[in-house]
Length: 191
Length: 89
Image (cartoon, rainbow over all chains, first blue to last red; front, side):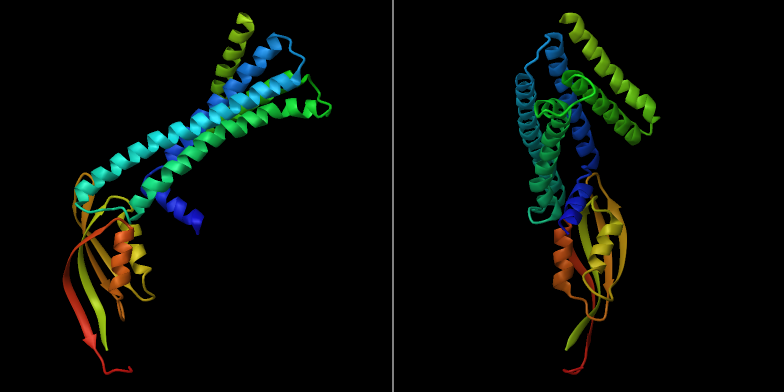
């Protein structure tokens, strides 16, 4: 029932697209940031995995907090403005209506997605480092495994975008992958 | 006992939820409601509706609550059809 209600609020505010966009944009931010950090440590030939994990988790938490707060503040302001305009057109108070509920709940939902997307993807990219730290054997060095994971995540985000935009999945995946590879190359050159 | 058989309402509502969802939500207020919704006028942010609700005994309070919940504003009750029956029937 709660899910149905959330679906209804998202529907009347046409927020599905916005949530998707926030997920991809901030998820991409998170994945690319992790790729940058891990590549930087790779260039510096760092052996201390605890240090790398600490940097990655710290950045992931910062991205999460940034995503949560920025999306909530901006979405709440936009929704309040839209509700005020609608109330003016309706010449009625819509505080008790679904539109009023949407102003209260939709920004929270969007903020949660915006904050959780970089956190989850960052933790996924950091996972090989944690596994190595816990003593599990990996086929490649932990830093290389994390970089491969980041590239895979970024490729999958591209595939997801392709599904939305009805673009051939390999093409849209390749587009985001090229951006990630360019980022890596720049870091490797600078390093 | 007096039963409300038919009522015609003049409603102003935002574009979302759309007319179909709006009519369905009103119909869901009862077990045997027949709802006829006509969009009379459409503006940039709102639309004016004429909604006819028919049923064995329409619960106006529930209909009014559904309209408010969906963001609608009931402007007027234009037609009312009621029927009386001896108590206990």
